Image 1: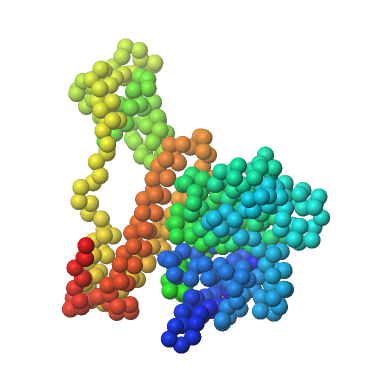
Image 2: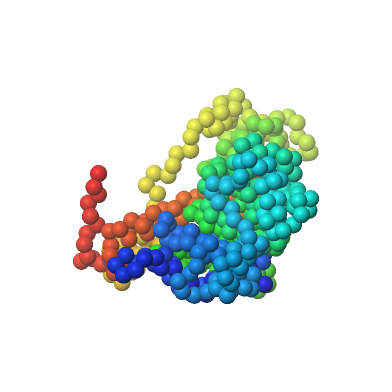
Length: 238
Length: 190
């Protein structure tokens, strides 16, 4: 089941002489259980792609389909609702609310989903347990390390029915070991059924993905392809 | 690197006979260098001739001579560990040469060469990462060290490819191919 599809998506800013083609004719899809990495230099359109995928921006051409729904078929509040319920974001700069504890940060999207406080807290604790931070539930973000804050952000991104994780350079501010543990966590969550799109300029981190695509000047120029299945590896061996 | 220093390092832990040395060498170097017993014995006899190891009297079984380090062997081992490994001088790197030649070979799309290499190297990186995900942090330390080095080296190659692609796109008009009669690369401005 595809969590995200982009069909021939373009995003143009400005008009005439000042036209900027942030994205041109990009098509891709990501299924549950799959992690896709998007690499490319600054200005290649990676962040635009993520914004369009998450419904934070509208394409000027093509269609974006999240969890089977064409975003263009929804009105603004419909898009906002779909985005809130189905999509989780992880950014380089943690973006946790500093006046809320870890559990409160993770519970917040559930409360916005309309879930009652007690259930929301339970969901938050489950999510924190899955990122091995149950002990930190009642700590504030400034009492957590960078890696811990990023794990809280991942827990928040995937709490409830959120099955699509959009991560924009999530390891930028972290050292190599901590960054790797964040990637391992994203990988595990995808193995458990989430779909992930990871924007990164770091090849070591992109290498955790099933598939890596390369953007340059708003266009997809290369693709590592789908990973070999067990069957195809065995066929190759005989 | 020669096998010699590996054997000295193992004997630095405790005296061993030839077969043990072979097994321990493979295990301790992350299974990256299979040795045959002949290599072990010929290295031991050279080390013995050079006064770095000696035979002990305690054969575990008849015919299985146990070796140990001499004082000279200990000193050689200490020197090896404290001396940095020299980077290869003037590496004859096929990729670097291929790209350099591609710049002025008519009909070759240099950017395509770089991009094809990047896809291949990243696929290798994916393989290494899959292997890494399966390794155990505690039990496979030697293996993880070796794997991480291969990963970092592959990553540095990808960064060089990205860097080169950007460099080329700045000095060559996009879409044209460099040819012998095209502009010479502009002199670097400092």
